[in-house]
Each structure stands twice: as C-alpha cells, then as structure tokens.
Length: 345
Image (cartoon, rainbow, N blue to C red; front, top):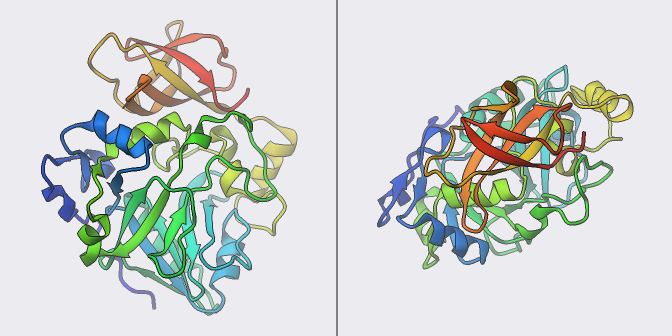
C-alpha cells in the first residue's frame, strides 16, 4: 500500500520572514512578496534570489519497475533515465486533455516528483490505482520534504540536494515546437526546483534574499512557460500551449491520450492558441485571471496568467480561439491588450 497523502496545505515557515505577505489561491501557503516585489524580481532575474515553493507537493516512486512504469503512463521518454537527469512529463486523459504535470528527477533508487499544490493528491491516487502487479510504491512525502525555486540552469551535482531543472523552452527528444525555436524569450530564464528536508528549509535558503511568488510568476509569464491549472482547463491539449517541446515524445510507446496528440500533430490544428499579452499600464489594477479576452465586443478566450514585470509592466498569457487575428488588439476587463503570437495559428 502507498503512504497516506500529506496535508493538502502546508503553510510555509518562511511566511515569518520580515515583510512577508501571503499569496492568494493555490499560492496562499507561501509569500507573494517580502515588501518590495520589483526589487525581488530583479534579484531573481539576476540569479541572486531564491523562491519559497514549499507548498508544492512532493511524491516519490520507488521499486525496480518505477521508470519503465512511469514511461508507460506518461508522455515523455523515461525508460533508462540517468540519475540526476531532469524530465517533464504529463498525464493525459483518454481524450488527450492535460490532467497532471510531473517535474521528475531520479536519484538512482527513487524517482522524485514535484507537482502543483492542488494536483498532488489526485496524482498520487491515480498513480496508486495504476500499479497493478508491478514492483512500484507511491508515497506523498510533502510533510517531510519541501521545494525551493532557484534561478539556475544546471542539474544538481552529487553531494548537493536533488533538484529538478526546468528544460523550458528547449526541444527535448523527438518532439515539436508550436512556437518559435530561435529567439524564444524563455531562453533567458533559468530555473530549477531544489528538494530539501522540510525541517531544513530555512537553512537551505541561507543568506540568499527571498523573492515571492509574484516575482517568479512574472518571469514565468514573460518566458511563455505554461503552468498546470493556469494555462490549462478541462479541455486543454498540449499543442495549444506549446507543451510538446519539453514534455511530449512523439514516437515513444503507447500512453493514454496518445491518439489525440498524434492526430492533431499530423493531421489537424489545435482549436485554441496561447498568446502573450502586453496590457495597457495606464491604470493601477491588473485584470483578474480568468477574465474574458474580447475582440470587437465578443469573447474569444480567457486570461490564464497575469503579472507585473519589472521591465515590461503589466503582462499576461491567454488562450484564444485559433481564428483570432494575430494583429488584432484585444481587451481584457476593459484594458487594451496587444498580443504576441506564442502558438502559431
């Protein structure tokens, strides 16, 4: 039997740091900022700060069949994954809709997975239901391990805590890009998730300055990086948000939802496309995530993420109908929004 799930919400001890202001929604257990979000963002962009991600869920998969088993269930090539080599892989529905996003790294004996806070228990339960007779065990160890976000683009080395390095926006393996390859803004963002004992969270931060979730989100949005539960809804397919590039191997063995991935890639076009938005900054209020994106008085999509960037001002990501004109000026909650194509129509 797998280990029972850890508590759904683990409030971070770093919320006791000077100036800490708690986030909202799924990011409520960690700090949105520590008093100066623009300065925090600049420090993070310069590679100097660290982000509290201790609300992310941490799962482990043990047993000799763990990598081949995960390979058979998810979208990425995982069989034979070398120790301390990071991978991103997705679980799709039978119809190919994105259900779970796994940030995965193996240490040679255990596969470690970090997930969004709201996704940890559903993912653990689903994985546990798929074990059958294979030699694997699934556990939620969020009560004992926590995650820190670091602006580093290297894998963890032996002797240091295990880390998942974000591959975005590289093309990983046999895959495809639905947006630009050269000149992608995500190439300027380096990121990894360090997995540390929860009791040693403050010690792992050390004397580095803390940056809040607002800073991390602004840099993610500027990099066009999709996030589960933000750039996804119940009908999102990977092509719509350019997620094939890091998380989908196009010619591996069968997995749930593969038919949709192959059919849309080979024969069709995604019904929606991700766009990057430059929002009019003359006002002081950002539109709410989930707000309708409007063209000529008609809703053509919705705002998936919104942030205030230290250089670009108010920015966002949105999913819009594929047929939306690429040069059209959109509006969100009455705020003008100039779009930049992420997924080509």
